[in-house]
Length: 190
Image (cartoon, rainbow, N blue to C red; front, top):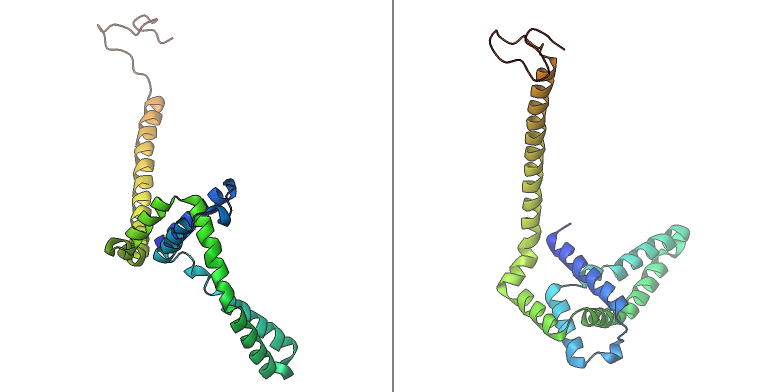
């Protein structure tokens, strides 16, 4: 999943959670606050991911109806297209709802700052280049993960090897004249 989509989902999820927690309705939100939310949504392209819903629903309905009534194919195509176009203005309802969700989740000042950033050159670049950078970061993290896991396994194996070698080594008697380990007398092996 691209960074842009992740950021959008994260912001949308956070806004949704906050919206559910806050009792304010759209009527309780100032027009300037809703306008700031719409500007931020536009800057983020936050609702663009929903643009395909109506065309996809129309295509699925056409396929289903044509499969059931192949003899009515031309009528089905015409009617579904007409009814689909009649529903296009309802896309604005989603924009209004999204603005309310964002307005309940963020202050007007925060939304203005978000819009300012994402309308800046850096913000636009983040939206376009972010997915590529994220993909490269994920690759780098995977390589790092494999290396760190390999090095950890190797270091642990070396230490365990030393431990098992020490436990398996026979105890040799202490050379003459050296003090015996505590609890033993020289020459005895308890």
